[in-house]
Image (cartoon, rainbow, N blue to C red; front, side):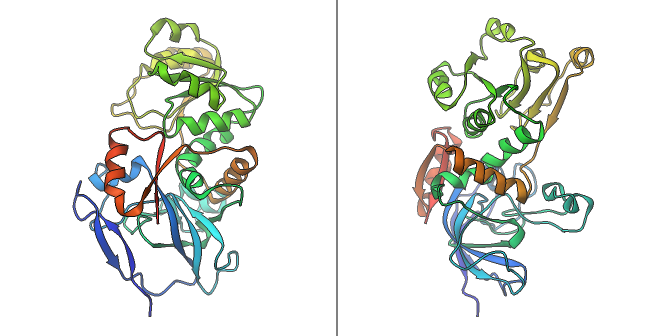
Length: 336
């Protein structure tokens, strides 16, 4: 008989998390059960708790930046071993048969399953997922710093790789927070010249320490105009409205603005500079299992780390409040 999984669940939109246990049922043939040591708190968790996206079903346990060890294997799982340290991100399953899955782009599967969307996630002692989405974690990565890479890290890594960032690239990173501080590090690893954009002048020293060559206070219109036509790729990680025309103007011909942070208002983009300079605007969601494996390997070999503040799992509500108030620099992680 399967023992119940114990976690912390929201029972209504915006409610505080309370102890909750559920019977996970029999382990499926392609499933893996993970005993959780760490789980990052992502802004997506806050949106799901509050039902901001209209997708949440209660009660549910949030959490999708999981690090732990394999405690159970389905009969068909041959790729992992009991006791192995693994990670699980936003996605826990896909159909495996559609055009996108067969092209190794499982994160675009139209019936993909989220780790904590319509199922229970990682603010718990255990969690389950399809083995294809359970990724071995390199020994060199400390668990508390690896956990945020499984959503925050892959969210910035994938577009940098997809758009071919390399030593000839001039890259801008907008927002030096939970996503941006990781993006600067990966862009540096790829050899790019990095310009950090922030509304906080106090973050300049930290941005340069992470690998940025240049820093622009985005509140200063003069400074924004001075970088016009200088960047090949701009990654916007901030969840805030921007003067998008200034970032379009900052692009070189054929340059790309990629959005991974969700601004609250619709984006207003001027058409003429897109047409005149063959510039483009795009977005990017998480990444495939292959990209997750590659990202963790790159992070391990090149010392990319999330800056974290760790809280006991039992104090998840306190940690969530600190995240809401932007008082965590830069990622909160729960530890069992």
